[in-house]
Length: 131
Image (cartoon, rainbow, N blue to C red; front, side):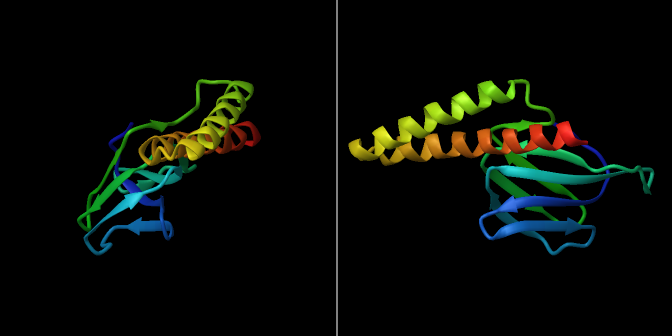
């Protein structure tokens, strides 16, 4: 989605939001569906408002100067309407209930990841409406 110089970034992980700034110790960890918050810079000068990105499950690679994020899906502004997202959420929740009775673990995991991304899109859409 982007390649910019940043002041810092907040990334959703299994253990909570990971905040990364220059000099962060090198690490690799998984990210969870949620909202990333990025504080951009231009020529080493903070440029103002933070940027919000809804993301799906993925990985983050940090080497102290560069943060690389790999995610199946990431969105700066959800294209679907709130009603479409809510309907998709409802459909996925019903599918997950059905899959649980069928013991389809892999399909349940895929559906839960999609559901997490839809929830992140809904949260981002609400944030953008109030901004």
